[in-house]
Image (cartoon, rainbow, N blue to C red; front, side, top):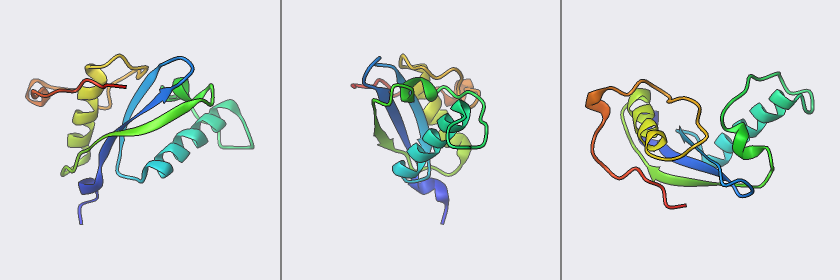
Length: 118
């Protein structure tokens, strides 16, 4: 079975600052959130976690007052398709994401509503 058939787009919102981070995954949401938190602990040097480089998601996790919600299920065929969809949400919303997950090209700029109501 193609693992990208279970993919989805999500956001994490900091309830203190209102900042929003948008991501995508094929893993269960609790697993994906756990990886974000492990990366943050590594970046901060907490509990002997492996050192990590800065990631945009840290901006919404730092205050330990956040919520993670699914924007949409997005079954697709491969990572590029998933990253394009994620990129369209990032590009069309005010997020703390510092970069797009892939380079969007004209054929990827499909019509649709990519605005969040959070």
